[in-house]
Amino acid sequence: MVSSLTPELRTHFGAPPDRGVLVAYVAAMTPAAAAGVSVGDVIVEIGGKPIRSSSDVMFALSDVGRGQAVPVQLVRAGKPHSLRATMTSESLADLFERIWPGGWWRNLMKQASLKS
Image: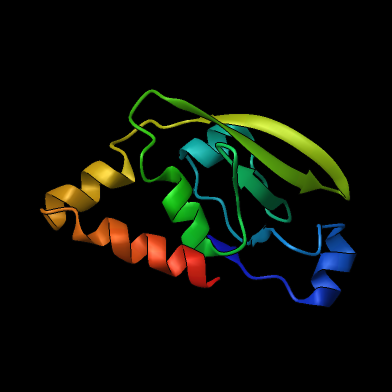
């Protein structure tokens, strides 16, 4: 789970002024946990896409399929840090398509990402 950053939190964690979300919780046995994402990290980029909100995280991961690795750029203890996360279950795109066939949710996610 990630949350937005206030200007004060950005300063505290050493995050850039224009992007980043704070990792508030990492569930055990998830791709994030396996990759080494920790509470207190600030995720600034996933797969080359800038992260400014939780919806950006969902959008960046939506096309990453099972077994695919995606680069993650973050700030940890005020310093840039890179890692790779490998999806171990179905992609968000596959899950959403199974639940809501037709792909209409892609435009919704894209619009949410553009608003943040």
